[in-house]
Length: 292
Image (cartoon, rainbow, N blue to C red; front, side, top):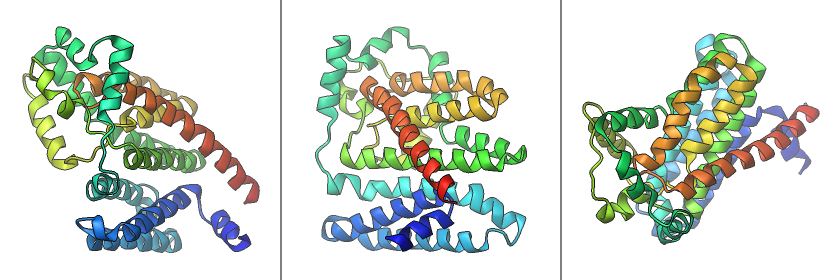
């Protein structure tokens, strides 16, 4: 136990979060080997990510490029590859979608389906704007990280990176525990108006569908949790970025329901995800700082 504690103290919290989550996915894959469609691919992917992370920890200070890859490049790639791999895990280890429960909860709150209620305000210009805002999801945390690195706020960057990665991994855990497709699939037959934009909505929807596939990633809303977390961190570390990001994030969160990706309950769960990330992350980060 003491040796494990020493190891955790020797690497930054962001690395710890990544290593532990990859190990979790690797164990889950091995345990579920016979029911997964691509277990060998998943094992290879997770082992390579684990090795890459450990190698980068060792060589990160051997050049500016390697340091940038360690700080921002690899975490970004890791998040994307892990998210993509969930398509081959979630439905097979937990095949029962919770969409019916989420639909009932939304209906209890609004006495109707929110995505159907929003048909009253739909128009092509608004759809274009909100679909674009929704698509900025990954660019917002990356942009924030680049600003912190540019301003040489390295301590703030390390903490922000840890909290953002932790929020991503907790959202992925939520997808495994509570698989949900979202209203764009479950409520499709009830919608009376198709989502249509003038220029960019349809191409962006098609692109996201091709890139994301069917992940059962509606609950909790990672879009909500991550972007609120970035707003919180930017309020602390970069007020200019906060004011720039605020309208985009506000539109993004509204777009999660308007564009039929999420139920309102998912958005509420995304806010809870943010709070859990903050509580758990701050506790661990304080422990790590005291031990270093």
